[in-house]
Image (cartoon, rainbow, N blue to C red; front, side):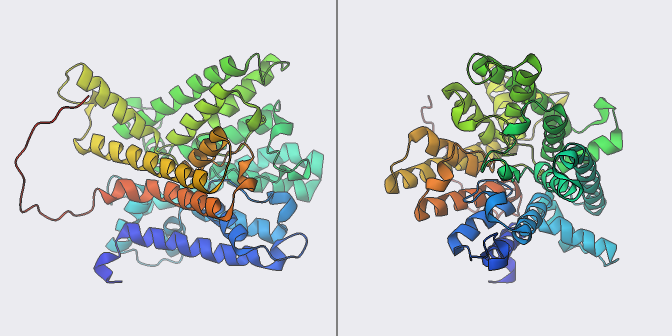
Length: 444
């Protein structure tokens, strides 16, 4: 491939592919499984894609199938997939005092969805150190619950594993020792576990650019970038509104019989985790149709740009809503918080939404053509994959080889979306030599 064709976005995509393949080969080794038997290439590849793309859909229960070595391979892929291998390799260069050239800085801008190249190295330091801090605190808090139940060594390991998985919005868990694929249902009413996991998911999902703004300007709202304000507002609305909606939809159904505090924790966690985290504290398959549909919407939206989360992103939805408002009320510009959105913002948001919807619909059509499965379950699985959410009603283990390949492709493009779809529009464009005459068409 010619060097001029190997753009920053393509380097990132190829890098993730290499990590996925290496991880799959390691997971195929007999030492990676509890029973000492080799895992099939397709099964290992599926789990490797899911871990590297921080999704959480699994063909095998993580605790029951994988040995300690296999679990550590998955955990490494989760950490690399969450932070990005460009971020991690750049931090190693900083530690080794290697010179970081303009090419590497431009690659960081692509990888982290930064607004500008300046400050990229400083941001990398803060990302890695902040990640270690948050994951460390999360591991300690979770260990306070797990150590008394599981013993010192196992409790600390479980605290570390689930803290990293939550912060990276990966959704992998080791709770299969209680019951395979049970996730955190045993802790549905435990404030320490549920709120710690929720905090890690939210912090990891708001985006590294927002981190930078919060650290720099502290609590001075007026000094925040417009991007930061939009992320914080949209995140708060989704959390509060989602909690209220899940409570209303399940109050007399799945939440019936729970105490008031248990209902709040269940509703709040149900609003947090679909936005690409992948955990669940109640049986997902037992949710009402309304809650399943709401979960699909949340999985499609996902987290915020430049974060460990997937989905089309909160900013994308907000930009489209602002454009809809400005068009209906005949406003010339899309403005909010004293700032005006750039002209290309709506185009980028529209393309991201349309591409993700197209991939999801195409994926569903292919799966329906090769398997006879319930419509709702396939739809849930597909949107979970494209949004890298990792939630499932249990259909993952019933997928055929072709269907698994479809889900893997969706997980990969879902993770790459935040890194390539948005950034590809800012790459240098060739000058247009010819413009055709403008003509009117009827819309709506």
